[in-house]
Image (cartoon, rainbow, N blue to C red; front, side):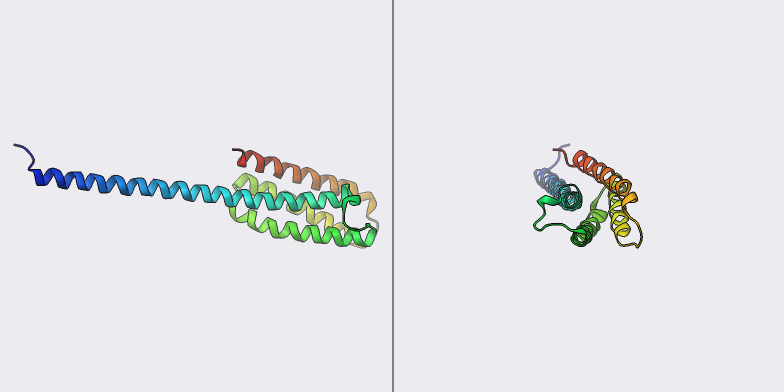
Length: 151
């Protein structure tokens, strides 16, 4: 007993439709993954740039647009930390668990530096260790981001 011709046609149509649907679903999944990776790279890049800017304020103030006296250093630090805050929010939404932990540490260390500058009393004895902690946390985030975004 054989399958009638109409049955074979229906089976082939059903199989073709199923394969088309499956192929489309796989393609959509790949596109979603590619877009997610792109958004993650953009968020990581923005935070890296903001972290780098704060580091540059302190390590290379001569590269800043204006001469940096104490008042301008405080203002430039506050502006850099505000940029870190903005970039950090995007990273929180798209980062992996490991990158989110490293971003948390860098964000916290940046705020520690800003808070130190905005508290009364002597600061300079504590400035070095607080800045070093920020630099280390920023470096760890950058390394994690590079590892995740490597092509």
